[in-house]
Structures are given as structure tokens and as C-alpha cells.
Image (cartoon, rainbow, N blue to C red; front, side):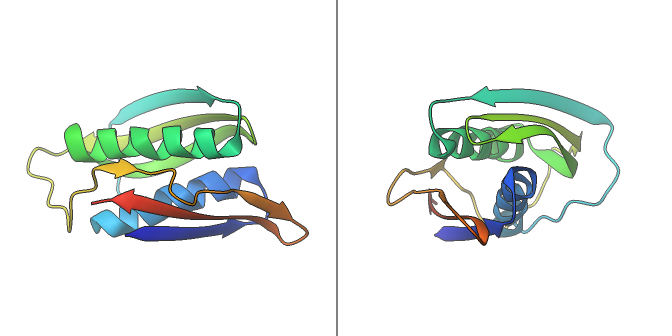
Amino acid sequence: MGLEVAAPEWAPFYRSAAEGLLALYGLRPGRRGTSKVSRWFKAESPEDVLVAWLTELIFLVGTKRLLISRIEVLKAGPKELRVRVHGQPARGLPLDREIKAVTYHGLKVASGRSGLKARIILDV
């Protein structure tokens, strides 16, 4: 299963990737959250940052069963991402599917005049 992500700059690019992943779970941000999780990702490439970010979301949703209500992108660039995720723990969180991992198969973050693009393959 895969995602295609496009955005004009880094902050919406990372947010859009997260929203796409949540949509594959059958979840939509927007409810109130009582928990906050802050994360900082720093890597050698935008592909590594993207994989680390989505892998963390898979852990928060798939393992911790956090119903994500809002994603704040505090700082974003090709080699760094700082985010704050708001959500609500939900033991019986129903998911449309389980997502095991983000892969590097064919992953390339392309930057051009129209913004940023990536195609992400997920292991389900």
C-alpha cells in the first residue's frame, strides 16, 4: 500500500504525509486530545526524516493506540522536523488496517518549482 504526498513547502509536506497515513488507518484528525507528544527528528536526508516521522506515527497509533486529534509542525526542513502531536489514548481504537512499517522501496523526496513530492510504500 502506498501514499503520494505533495505540498508547496516542508511543514505542509510532513503534515500531509501524516494525514495520509492516518487516513489509511481510517482516522481523521479533529477531535480533542488530552495528551501531547513532542518529537524531534534530525537526519542526513529528507527521506530519513520522513521515514522516522511516519514510523513514529505508526508506533503511536498502532501500538500505543493514540487517537490523534491535531498535529503541530513546529519546525520543518529537509533534514529536520519538530512536531507536537495531540491525541487521546483509546484502548479499543478501531483501525481499518494495521500498518507494519514504512519502507525505503523507491522512496525519493523530489523538490522542484511546484514544491515537494514523494511516493511512500508501506508494509501492511
